[in-house]
Image 1 (tube, rainbow, N blue to C red):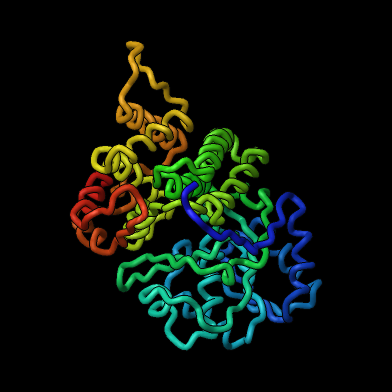
Image 2 (image 1 turned 180 degrees about the vertical axis):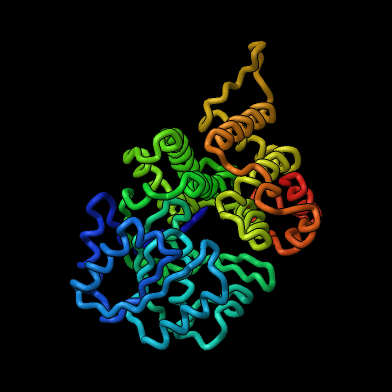
Length: 397
């Protein structure tokens, strides 16, 4: 490992079927007013809402409800949540739901006491918070984003057609998170597999970078193999607790900042997917699935030997691709790399993922706009031009 780094993750996790029993002890650490954040109401159907409210009542908390958080939280909803928190002088933001609820809660947390508009401050100027931060706790009901143990908060602005993530520091990370895999079993299949690919791509974004011998890459390979194995079980039997628990735990470790230590990282698949999501409002994991293969193929063709070598390693270590062809001769690194992408594509089709942006509502007329709103990052094997972004998006249709 060539890089120097600091690692700290202050989020306390409670994992397992009885994890929610620990909520009361965490609630006791905060004041009486709790802003209860949730989405479209599924937690009321599956009983999670009642269980959480029972704990809140037992602890004597005053509950201020903030429901209706959408899958891609909007800046308008963020401003609404900030006003709720200000009007009620809340002591804790408790997000109960998936990653969107967690992201939204963190965005609210840094905005309640900020003087400036949160979109301008955090998503245009990318400033760090310089005000009091309202603490956040999470009860997770969907595995995928890793938002339960990181400082990221993605917000969508439909007016400007932008979907942008701000990764805040450790002070914004949830103070605690309850992870009960049972809470994820009621998810529709579409949402389950979208979350699985989000997890996988989080690992890929950190894996496909750098050329040194890095411990993080070995951890990533193990997590990817575990996820592939568990996803195949869950795809057949979504109520297999062991598989779903492994998926949930992998999601947390895929994006709690551990894998990025000592490495450069890429994140261009997320930039492409988020830009497409701002135009289509499609499920996040599915936008990633639609753009990732065209991006990876473009890298192998254009980004140089270090990139090709890493994709060849991905093929052999994650997918078990042989270095020998059917004729017994050693294949080139590029041939092995492309064989790995073939295996990835086969797995994606097996899960039933969306494989093109057109399936999500995008068309040729949107390409220039999506390309223009794509944030271009420098951490991967190649810094794309705006024209290359448009080319990859066209290949993703």
